[in-house]
Image 1 (cartoon, rainbow, N blue to C red):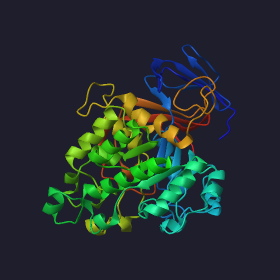
Image 2: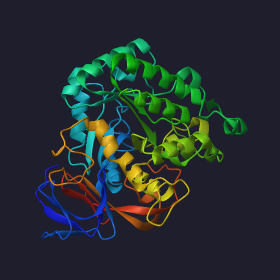
Image 3: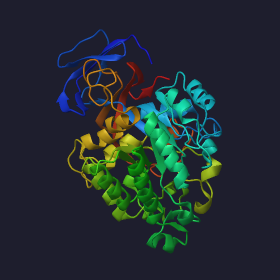
Image 4: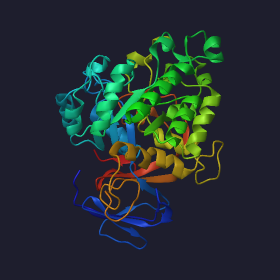
Length: 442
């Protein structure tokens, strides 16, 4: 998004991949013009007491449109994202119809014109996400698609997936896999364990995820393709990914914010808002996921934003669609419930840099790949010449999460009524203020 405005963000501290320091940030013509103390410009955006970070990047956002406009549109999702500090979101391919052709990629881009943040398409690996034949990956890659995923279903034909990996390796794109073996997950609605037994609801064992992770790591080793796992949820899955990466495999993984905050016991009230895919796991799994985040070992924390209409969620738990509205709330939930924060340590002891890194520059590196240092494509460092994609966060702001006051058309979230600490004051996308003083400008 081109922008010719010049302004300065004053009174903040800057937090990026290089560390944290007190500085003003001067923005001119869509780029960071200078970073330092005592900067000035005709237009000043107050950032006193705030933290300026690279804009957040979400790799896993359900857009609703086309096909489910009653639950979400591209513009309503982008507005919610910008209010949550995101400057770039990647739309999942599981729209209706599925994003599996050049025409559907162009349609999504047309729908995203004028949106409050940058909305990029992903595409399915197979036509219609049916797991039968590959999409025209070379044509889609030429249009700029970098992430390919049969979202929500994954690919279970190992021979077909191997072919996809081989094509991806040659094209320099990323295969994203939703790890869930359908024969093990069939009939399940929450994590298989004591709580599924107590509630009398069919469970999805951790092994349904883990057997897919094991197989796909082997295929990635065989082909050399870059593999990214969607929304992993178990301790063993992340341990396997971490071990594979230490052996040099080009593999990354994301975790949904809901799995970092909630556990299967939170489903005890049969609230459909607590039904997710993958399901909320055990307390032991959650502790392991948070531990990986605290250690800086998570590649991305995603919103896994999955908007639904009222009729899809206000039904019995085992009939409800999985997922919740998350884009606008993900950062604030992480700040409130995971980080050390400005007010002292909290129970889970995740450093602020680790949280923001997993929401910002780490997913940006997955999305964009390796880029020359010191260019406008440098992600994660706020410096002169970098693209002005910025989030300005007030870490002391306190507020109550009210879904009805959100920008998303979908109101379903298990976090309604939570007292939160930390809120986005400004969001700058390509040098243009899209959120000013907490108010969306589009």
